[in-house]
Amino acid sequence: MNSSSNTLFLPSNFTITDWSSIESYFNYLNEMPLTTEDELNKFLLYKSELETAIDEDQAWRYIHVNVDTRNEEAKTAFEYFIDEIEPKVESWFNKIDRKLAASVVMRFFEKKHAIPARSLKKNIEIFREESLSVFAELQKEEQEYGSIISEMTIIINEKVYTLKQATELLQENDRNFREQVYKNIIAKRIEKSESFNELLSSMLRKRYKIAVNAGYKNYRDYQHYNLGRFDYTVEDVYNFHQAIVLEVNPLVDDIIQRRKYKLRVDKLKPWDLQVDIEEKAPLRPFSTTTILKENAQECFRSVSSDFGDIFSLLNKENLLDLDSRIGKAPGGFNYPLHKCNRSFIFMNATGSMDDFETLMHEGGHAFHAFYDNHWPLIDYKNTPAEVAELASMSMELISMEHWEQILKDKSELKRAKRMLLEGAIIILPWIAAVDKFQHWLYTNPEHTHHERNLAWTNIYKEFSSPIIDWEGVEEAFVFSWQRQLHIFEMPFYYIEYAFAQLGAIAIWKHYKENPDLTLNQYKNFMKKGYSLTIPEIYKEAGIEFSFSKEYIGKLVGFIKKELDRLY
Image (cartoon, rainbow, N blue to C red; front, side, top):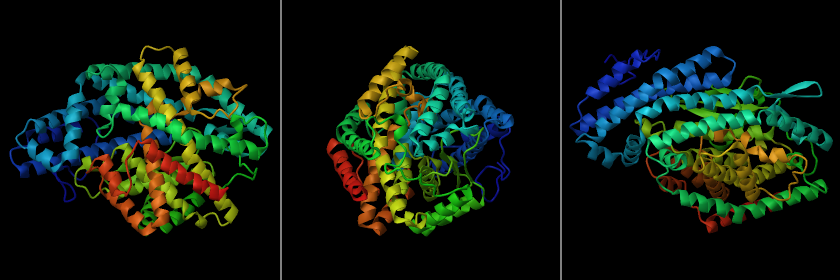
């Protein structure tokens, strides 16, 4: 193999054009001897280098198709990878993994790399050649959701808004205007509701097929294992749903009731949920993405100079795409680029405080990717969501202690903190509802669209606040699940946000008590990558990984006290 000084066996100009540009490297790996521990170490490093290079190529194709959903060249390149390259890559990596598992050095691998070893065995167990084409079809459909959303616009007062931009108008003080905006948004969503139902039905059929091919009776059980949830069970998740209802919902109702009282309305409507409770003008901490970057840089640097340096580097290298525009996919993400030791941050900012918080969140992911990049094997950098989201959600709350850098007015600072803490609690029942809905979707695969909407309605009633009055906009309640992109694009990747949110609250509590110690623990757990189990990583962060009603109640009680100080 022709390699450069910066690579082990890949050429310095390694580029993926088609399958033939990769195949020889898989053949080389497959022919490597695996009889000694030294040979194992070399094999693992070579395999990791190839996997890292392929992952980064796919990452850029994904980024380009999200940055501009109208770019046909980017779409073609992304779909070519999915159709022509990825199935062969997956098949070959399975072959390579089986070679390792059957070798005499597997015992060394399991002893030295226990966490990657259990993932490798899991991957071998559920891999099915016949599912590769189904995965390829699914990935294209998963992009379709974002493409539809990116083209959805509404006209208000003769001005065109993306859905994200229009949603920000729900913070305006004119109640009649908010109602008009809300109903316009809902009308546009309902216009597409059947399209989204059809899209999800197509995805459900494919996911069911993947599960059955792998020997599972439903996709829920398959995905629980596929996501590497070795440290908790499906039953644990159900218990967690119930704990949210018992411990979190009462505080959510208190927050919602307070909003109704402060706004002096007889009925609190869905368009009353984002406006300031004292009817102050919406917080607009930045007017351009340039100012957003400057504010974020200052805040990150206040937390740690390392974080400021990392964010500055990403900005300098044009690895931030932050503004909202037509033809851009919805949502936000941080995509680690392990080969070049960078990250790409993508979001849809419109000037709100929520946008600033989102950048704090994605910044946490980016810092995590930098801190765990010292591991020589990519297996240790691919952290599970329960750990990845702990880094991002903790950064949101930790950064709050430094917001005086961007919010000079003390009343605005207090208001912003209150909004973040309220949001951190209000989101938990929604996460539980979305997760429970997905359990229903995939354990009842033959359901109709009507049964699906009815199931969501019943589940959401269990978790939503009865104080909100949906009369006249009942369809908004029924179809509200369609605004959660994870249901379409990342099935079952959502409950982790709730686990991580509670963990982040615990870290923030410690940070308020001892910032230096907590920051060291925060950095230390990020450095660990995926070298430990999830509970062990949480312990490194100085907190528990717990589902218990008592633990959740303790954290909710802490948030209640903090909110009382801010009211």
